[in-house]
Image (tube, rainbow, N blue to C red; front, side, top):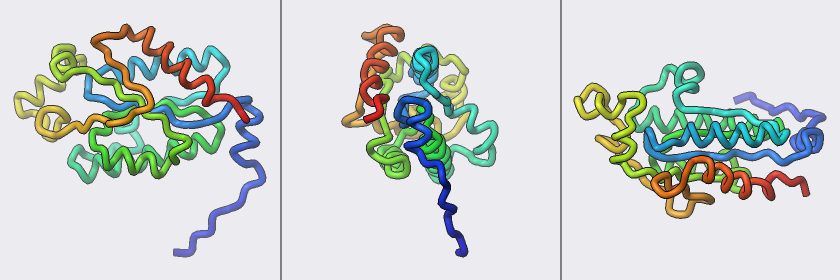
Length: 196
C-alpha cells in the first residue's frame, strides 16, 4: 500500500497545552441496562462544567451512523469496537477526553481496544450490575425481545459477558448511588487530567 502518514506541525501535546489538561479515554463496560450511559453522561457533565474538553461515544449512537452496516455477531462486534477505538484515538490526539460507553463483552476485544488506544490513555470502568437488575429495568425492552427469541446474540442471554478482572474502577450499582459513583470517578480522573 502506498500510504505515507502526514507529519503535522501541531501535535497532541500542543493541543493538551492549549486546553490545559491531558487527554485520554474513559471506557465504561457492562451489561445492557447496567447504567453505563447514565453514569457516563453524569461524568461528562461534571467534566464539562469544570472546563474539560470532552466528547461522548455511545454504542447506540455509533451504530446509527459510522457502524450502521454492522450486525451483532462476534466478528461484527469486534469490528464495531475496532472502529470505535480508532475514532477514540483520534479524539485523544485532538486533546479531548473521550467518554466511551460500550457493552464490549469479551476480554480479548477489550484488550484490542486498549492496544489501539494505548495503556496510558485507557481507563476502564466496569459498571457491575447484576443480570437480574438489568433485566428488571429493561429500559429499551431488549431483554424481553431476547427472551422471546426476537434478538439473537444478546449479551447475557445467548452471548457471554466476561467481566473485567482488574478494571481501574468498579461501580457496584446495587450498593452505590449513581451520583456518588460519578463523584468517585471524577476524583480518580483529576490526577490523570493534570499536565506534567
